[in-house]
Length: 522
Image (cartoon, rainbow, N blue to C red; front, side, top):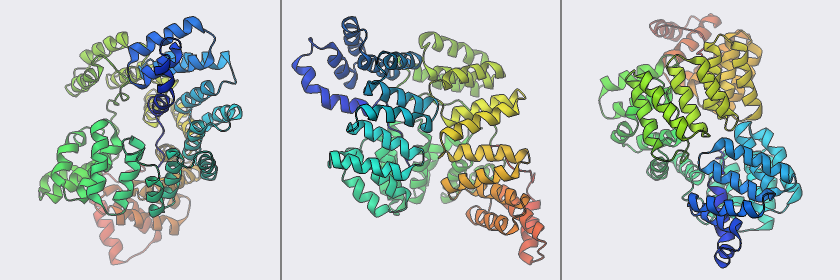
């Protein structure tokens, strides 16, 4: 579990620590240093003024342009930030700070694999820059290059044995390898540096949950979910921890509204359903569990905006847009997003919101245009999924497959992208490639019952009856009440021509569930 360092926050901590003394000593003589300090302290207006003065004095300073880009990115001016990064690299192709910023933007816009050469260019110029090494090491981990990540982390320890990120990166590797005790010890060596950061809270909470300390895990996830209410991963982990701790009422209170959305995930629906079961309210539980056992949701809801990216009350406008769409008032939603675009013309969060509104209003081509422009700066899987959905709605299946394939190539550890592409290819009958992709996804997201069910059907189509049955039975053991899972196991058993009593009972159960459709589309 690698949590990408936020280029709007992690760098700012370093800036505050490294620049505070110098900036306080000469705040007027060095407007560049003052601007960095003001940005680190969150005063965007003062930082802008300082950087404007610095640009008047040094318009060709590549490092300054990189800092201007960071300021613009943090202010939600994403496209202007990308222009500043390009300007910085153009001015000085060997400036480490400019190359680092371009690497971070490339990681967001293209993927982790494409970002690595930029980090390597920066390290050629500044090989012992420990913060740059930390960014590089984290990106190596996201690309699945764990040995290289460990090598970088050990180099960081050589340079500074007390540097918290060096130990954090090793803790991540230990957790991925299932060495939880080692991960805890390594995390403790960070000296609490990650206690208040999302990445640290996620790792600490996951370790507590795996150790059976549900209450402690819930505390970690609760703090993170309160700070980042649109962080879906944090919300789901919080729900899981609360349920394990016997706090079903809290699960319903926290996640019930999200589970009522048309695009609620099966995992979320199952969490809320189990919570109602724990409360003894079986009718409500059945409503959510039936939806969790049905087809994967095809509806698309409104994506949340990035943390802090929208100023001037735009966050409440996003909530208003959601409400308007829920009330079937798309015209008003489109008018509101048009006003947001006027106020934030360079914000990709507004562009994604505009795309969602357009897509849900039936303007698929317009949605695709918004999505593509936003993807030039930040191309997360949720956005890739929307681009693919829009292409399919326009009758362009090949471009849909191509965009998901490109995302997976650039982000090889994306289980969601691998699963989606595998299912898309399975629908085409390309069973061999579908099987490889679903196997890869299952290796990354071990314990996903639906994914195992789909893998079972692909193995069956490939003639691997034994492998199909193993996947189907494991899937059924994970979710016995899931209709999709039961159908997959029934098909595998039918193909084996077994006549056991268990087989007949399972087939009867599967046939009672409708419809026994082929692989889910998502």
